[in-house]
Image 1: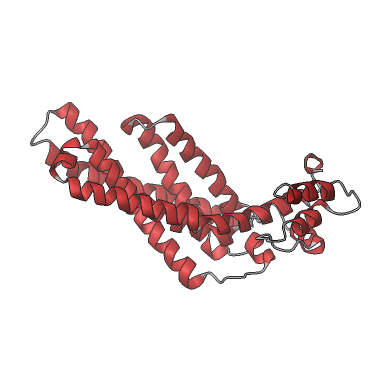
Image 2: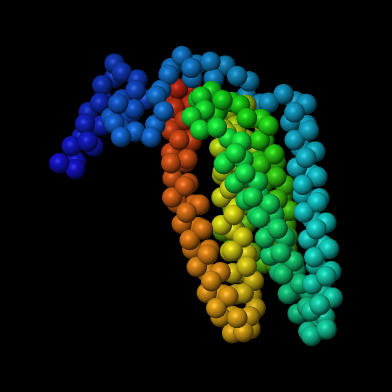
Length: 272
């Protein structure tokens, strides 16, 4: 019963006379996969690897501007927080606490900005049912989401490593986002159609996370404001479930299916 679709899938993959992507699409009858068009993907593969040089040069400048702007904001927050904490603590503990607090404030502001922009673009400006070619090659006008994320992570990486003591997994996360964001920022096949959600909308769930982390770094707050802390945790849980699971899943499969088709239809012998 339940294994029959799997056996059917495996049998169809073995039919060498058919394209494996056609087999995949026919087998997944419920399918969230778009229809594979070999002629369309052949034209997509003819696009240059990188976006025009002048566009990528401008993108680098924007990334530097974003990283510098976030750095300036965080340094201002650092001085404000230091001035407040120095009245209660010694210099060493004040410096450490101020770096963490200013880092969390900056994360909250950046995530809120990206999240709100992502919500607006997804609900108002990004059309549903866009053609495949535009999803893969187009939407250069929303490249700002990728550039913003790269600049944000370039700021977060050294600050997290040298001043905040972030975990290894978070440092790897920063590097990974820079690498993934660079694909959308600099390559022709950048899948920029999906970036307002993956680089923007999704960050809205990080806003309550930043607040929750602030509570964790200040245990006294949890004792003084237990109801607020519980509410923040609840809001984070709900927002994470909705944004990173419920809404995310169909969008991810749309992206994943197109990326798989692009990879498997390429002339790279590794994929054959």
